[in-house]
Length: 384
Image (cartoon, rainbow, N blue to C red):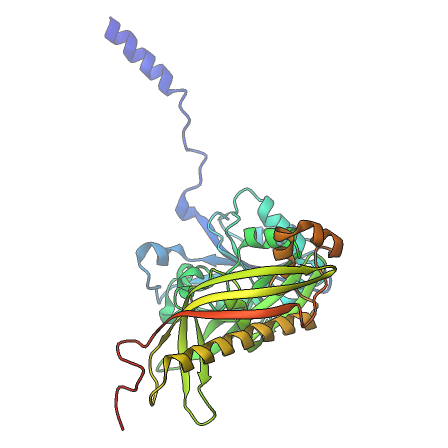
């Protein structure tokens, strides 16, 4: 009798358990991998990139008989209206939890159009703060349709996962939504966003292959878009933060020598604000390791250290001056003063940013702690 009562009790309790009958099966959903945003004729233009997750489940190599992704397009007075228009053309429910990156056109960056877009995605319950953010001058839909090298899955592309490529070279620091929000809310209320372009640096036996390329940074402030720093103008950024894993410097020892390339690693940066009455300058102290691989002739370690420090100083100064042309505190020097001496910062700041000029960086000290000649010594391997 006791066993019978226990059995009835168990059966009764199981009727109270929640089921999953109202859940959508995974194969009956579309998965958003990326969103592109443009602004045209006073309306938002939204591109949704839907990824083929069959490629991810089976292997890293994408299927050749199935499109790796499709991109939908719609317009609206708000970002939400455009997305709802796209819902009408979809066959299945959309899942946003796997969204990896946002791409903004130059027009979408201007006149604070980007701010409500960011606000939309951080408020939506299915998205995360770890969504990568990029900007571009190319048509946004073309960026979203670029297929990774060797037709790998889009989930392993550099835009979906920019951390892997930065292990070999951190030319541009990746930024996610969290970084953007912090950068806009903290002095100097400006933030750099990786600038992406399309290049045909690769090819197969049949054709040239398009691939995305980190070309510099776009600068965004609370008041709107400030402009782009492209290619050489943005090179100094990589030396002004501790998140750079590896960079490179190419130089000549003298006018008659061949060019050398040094790999720069283990970067440690320290910026010191110096306050003299109403004048503030900054001293930059940079400690690095360097590796030299191929070169001709015989070179002394001292010559290499001198040239490496000279080139890095030149790149930092160039990027800083290019930022001043756009009225941008590109290295966020205002924040260094804010952290170190908030009283002085309050006296000098205007909209979170202190006045800067070409002499604001008074000193750049680059210490090459260690220089590695590779497997050999500081002389060429093959003697003439």
